[in-house]
Length: 274
Image (cartoon, rainbow, N blue to C red; front, top):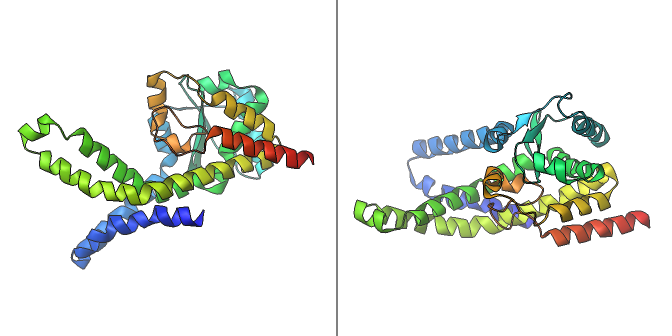
């Protein structure tokens, strides 16, 4: 994990390297802006999750069984009960975001229809383990350089075409691609490795909360490869790294292969039986 974290954070050295060629006052302003943006992303992660996925916060009366399950898991995990929200999507998935007292666990309507009670409990425990471990904040900060670089590279590639040539901004697009590509190469491997490690840790955390690795393994098997309409997949793509299983349109490599996660859960089940 340490090596992955170092690789992920190395992106800040690449990202901020040119900044320190500026006058000191300008460099401090840029660094201050970066810290402000990162702080805003970390502290507003729950709000961003609501906005990006169109999640709707629920009360106990709306989904009493779901609410009671989260309440009970919070007591078992010795943590405050996070707010619960439902995403109007047929894609069976779940995510968590936020830090401190600004957190949320989101589940899709598709998830509620797909899983049995013990499987849903295991998935919710996985998301609550993420919150207890502070993974939303860790991945937001560690993944920011890679996310920024990937967005810049995709923007540049999308604009390298005949229209850019005729309108005179082709050179800008090529320059942007040339600048962002090394940043992607430096930051993305470490960010993806860190994200996969956090998924394994959340799987273990879920088992520690529920004591039921088999249910989580069964849930992962059901969710893996589920055919989802593109419109539903798009609504979850922005929070792909925060979902229990990767979305079809999300960045690949953020999660370990499902069969490896299931194998580790089976090994945990065997250890518990022994």
